[in-house]
Length: 187
Image (cartoon, rainbow, N blue to C red):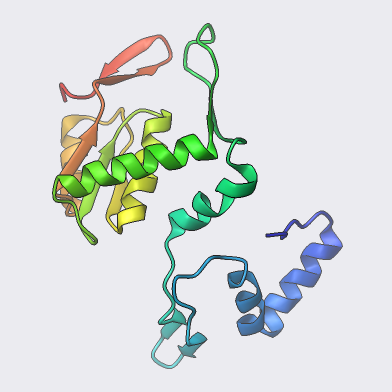
């Protein structure tokens, strides 16, 4: 996929295409993705109702586009570079292959615990690679995730769980905010 815009002139050209012929523009962009089932229609719209449908009948899995399709050529390249809160800790590099394996493992953990497409999961975790793994694992199986900042109070967490209608909470023992440890399970 080569969609790098390097000059303002290139940007203006792309912008004009998107305004003058949105169907062709977005079809060109969508063709850069791996589709499980190609769409029947790029765009259907009726501004009198307002109803807009994009890529009707098309089906894709976003994690296949984020991970799987990069395994052959970029499998050993870094997908996530994580710098710990403590500058004395080593930087953690996770390759596409490693990330793919972890996402698939966690997706299977979710499925083995009864999570299915459409289930809503609240992720109450610190900013660690495992949060990205959980997000991608949810997407891989079609579960809906809601990330809640790992510093919110029990009341704020409860409100967000209710608002998003989540029936599962995934958390960690705790996380760091500067030098301070924030216990998450205790909340």
